[in-house]
Amino acid sequence: MTGVRAMIVEADEADLRLDRWFKRHFPALGHAHLSRLLRTGQIRVDGGRVKASHRLSVGSAVRVPPLGEPAAVPETPASRKAPPPAATALDEARSWVIHRDDSIIVINKPAGLAAQGGSEVTHHLDALLDGLRFGAPERPKLVHRLDRDTSGVMVLARSAAVARRLAEAFKEREPRKVYWALVAGVPQPYSGKIDAAIAKRPGGGGEKMALVEPGEGGQRATTYYRLIDSAGKRVAWLALYPKTGRTHQLRVHCAEVLHTPIVGDGKYGGAAAYLPLEGIARRVHLHAAAIELPDPADKTGRRVLRFTAPPPEHMVTSFKLLGFDLRLERDPFAEAPP
Image (cartoon, rainbow, N blue to C red; front, top):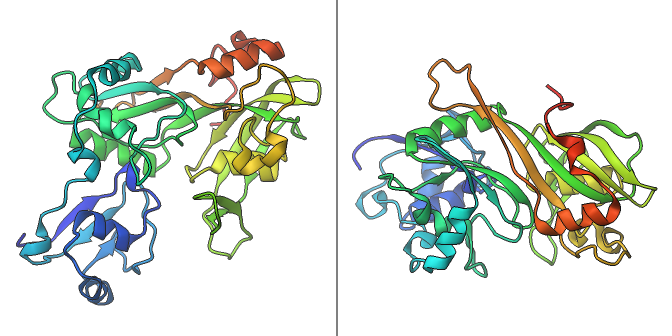
């Protein structure tokens, strides 16, 4: 590489430390060399000087100066080097598709499927993306994420150019999203706005987020919520409208602000998240029901696309047992905030 270039942070890299981002893309770049480039301002994020510990956001532009030949070629992510998945897994992945055009593919991601691989994760969406090419020259690209335990609408870009446009849209919070959650208890009041910063906290059991006070280094997180229906005071069906996209934002806000943990979410709700009712699965009851976003193929920027996805089987079963009628929310955006 002979000149400076800008690299766009993709969805699977959101909240990643800058030094780890460089380790992923340029494994031969040493820590001392990286520190020197940061100290002299040769590496920047969105035009500004940053530290190695800076956490990246989707769509941010990382200024990468000449690094020398050994580090110049980005390493292909390990998930893309893995042996191809079985044909049955690819067939299953194709069954998740709810929309496909020349720019995007929209899927209904099943609960329990991670978006990206890791040291203990071998089955994940990223490993299946080659099976979702449908004849396109480029591999589909993730432009946003859902937690492993969250099901629902996910948008994939069919080219790098579309991925950049959508990443910028998500960075500017243009897409509108609606989630459905079953929660233990009924929030008071029945609708409102949550504005509570969250941050990652150390501890056992893997990554965990927590509420923090202003000035404690957390990221602002905003969620609107509305009660759709309830079964007495024991359980409620909520519509959740996140205005920011922080890690585990909805799970933390439900458990720690509303004091109504998402059913099945023992990580944040503890024992209170499990209902003593026969037939209610001990799985997270959180579903990305709908998304509205700018059409990346529309050069005017005025046309929007809207997609909805039915909830997974374990949530449908719980809805029926509790007497909740999915027809109440034929249009998930009918009462959504602007």
